[in-house]
Image: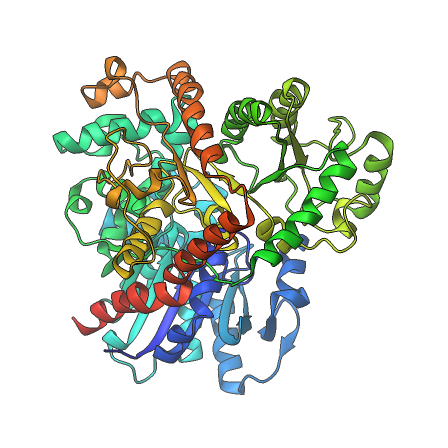
Amino acid sequence: MTYSIPLVIHATHEAGAKVGGIGSVLDGILSAKSYNRQVGRTILVGPMFGWDPVQMERLTDAGNGVQILYSSLHGIRYDVSETVQQALLTVERTFKVALLYGRRRFGDAEHEILLVDASSPDLGHVEKFSYFLWETYGVESFRYNYDFEYNLYMSIAQPLFAGLKALGVDEGLAPHERVIIAHEWLGLPVAFAAQLNEPEQWRTVFYAHEVATARLLVESHAGHDTRFYNAMLRARESHLPLDTVFGEQDTFFKHAVVRQAIHCDAIFAVSDTVREELRFLGGPFANCRIDLVYNGIRAEAIEVGDHLDSKRRLQAYCKTLLGFEPDYVFTHVTRLVHSKALWRDVLVMTQLDRLLESAGERAVLFVLATSEPAGRLAEQVESWESLYGWPVGHRGDNGDLVGDEAPFFFDGVEPFNHAASSSKIVFVNQFGWSRDQCGMRMPADMVFGDIRRGSDLEFGQSIYEPFGISQIEPLQFGALSCVSSVCGCIGFVQQAAAVLVEQGVLAAGEQDGQGEGRIILPGGELLGNVFADKGFPLVVADYLGLPEEQMPGSPRDALDIDGATRGGIEARNSRGCAGQIYESLPSSREQMAELLRLGNALAGCMSWESVVETSFLPGLARICQE
């Protein structure tokens, strides 16, 4: 049964332009046919960075698909009635902000956007809103007003809600016919503004794409995921909340804000892992309803020949760069941030190199990641390419390696390449994957899709990964995917695998008792332990499982896990991970075809259309019908 929802507001920092993961989620949901059939009107609301020329250029870039109908910053006022213009001007004058109203394309669909530039907001209104948050929810804004990000999202909340009222978006609608979805903590202030101005008149949803407190605790301690998740598992057994185990976290403003998401009518979590992290916050979160709304992937059917065509271009690029044509092409397309744990790729590659050498085979790993998301100029790349063989060679004194790129290359990639005999890592620190962006040694017909369609294995062994769309997208093209056991996408793959077993597309494996491939969170085993079977495309690297003598008996014991302990686990478990990868790599066209068949089947169960129709829309319908 379908249920129509007249109005949905998405409050997000990516309302105007796609920046990261939430932007990918919005692309998937807002372009889905089922969404556009059942939602009458959609408006994305968020910040406009008028002081940042790069951000403003990205907003108005033709590829962004934005049509501006009203913007005081751009001097545009057309196709908007005089009444609406005057209402928007009143909001701008009241709050001392600038507004932009327009439309933005998402696939074949088009939705409205409302953005606020709060470079110099009226502080009186901001203080009144902060007082409301303290009086109603106990959020002490004075503790966080040193932080630019916190101040920004508190400053735009009231004018965004007022802007919606100025547009008259909710005229004639009952409370159950209008929904505000707060994407992450950054969207919550808009939901709070609705609760302040029109109590009980809106349905509100907190859409948790991560748990900021969990990310902070994982990234900031050398024990990383090995420490945090073992502590969380032990704490769950004793019903202890996060603050009891790790200490009071309210000095972190994101923690303080997210804890108030409990006042929303519904909470969506993108994975089992995120749901468990939310429950770990304790208090009302421990037992409240949290709907699982997995991220989807864009399904694209290809043939084995298409995979091989893309792989040949990657092989040709490797031969040009390194002088050999690899039997296998591995990839890792990612953001260059600490949570992606790129050092684990090097560890597994070290073990794989020995297996490849014994079989007389060779491989290359292309890592496409950069600390410069805007990319390098083509002239720079061509100069580095001719001077010292970029991207095989790099320098750290000329703008080539910046930020985290330098330690990753000098501490990981370069030593590996000197020692390895049958494989190499090529670190492409550029935004894009084509000759005009990556230099003249790349094949002229190379396109970005080749690094996805031609890969034999995609790495993604993060220490913190709420979902991991990028890690599993290549599955549909016949690739293996190697993820860490805390990667949120595992639960969705498990669900899809269960469907395929029921349909007879996939045979359930035998339980081997070794725990290989098991979902560490929320604690259940995979159906038939199918992930451990040779030929299944998902390889789960377990960096949480400790030897029996090191297994923590309590949360306090888990807190003693340090970098040395975690490093030992990585060194030991990377061997088993490499072995499973090597056993699963296809050695014939027939095996490639089987991986492609299975990957296509999984992708069909994990598409955005499926996610929107089976979980996202039913979650909204539930709170609108209650």
